[in-house]
Length: 283
Image (cartoon, helix red, strand yellow):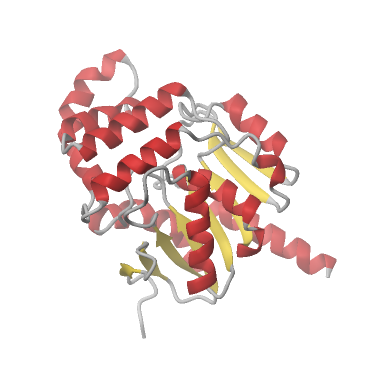
């Protein structure tokens, strides 16, 4: 008997790295946040991604965590990244997956995927994302990416700590934890890693999806914290109002959603089950 939680990993021909587990008949494509385009492994995978995706694996999904492709050209946009995922789904998943779950940067990509390639999935979920990012959020992300790209793990860790441990009173703690946070962000660093992380950062600086959201004509679930420093509550609510068939879930008192959030996987599963039951009843 095989272990459905055993993880397999590799790189698709498109150069998009993946980790997968589960044996169910349904397919889940998880588009992770950033910065960076390498798949988490070991401790990070066990403590963050598996708790998020386990409720879905238990329900019969095979989970695929797939990163952005490697050696992205300069000027590669979030829309271009969505096109990369659409091509992956066509080439590796027979043109359609049951569920796309994008988190943070992955959520931004999911908006374009749902707008431009709605045939690629039965259900779409964008968590921790909206159509605009605060300038402070863009600055934090850019400094994280720049620190990693330059090999300055302390600078990268300090920037990451600004949203994990915000406020002047936590400055000493950010300095203490910065080297460890920087190492955690560094990833396996394939040969294009430092180049790609800056392509991602530049694409985020240019990101604005206000005109994209009204073009999403399929149902989509939005999940965000109501104290998110990257995507504030009023922006998230505006995003939901711009999408014709959206469902919004706000996590009260929570900041930017991370993969270890204990509610996220269960809430996504409830949404998918509810939609499936509604379709079965209508049929």
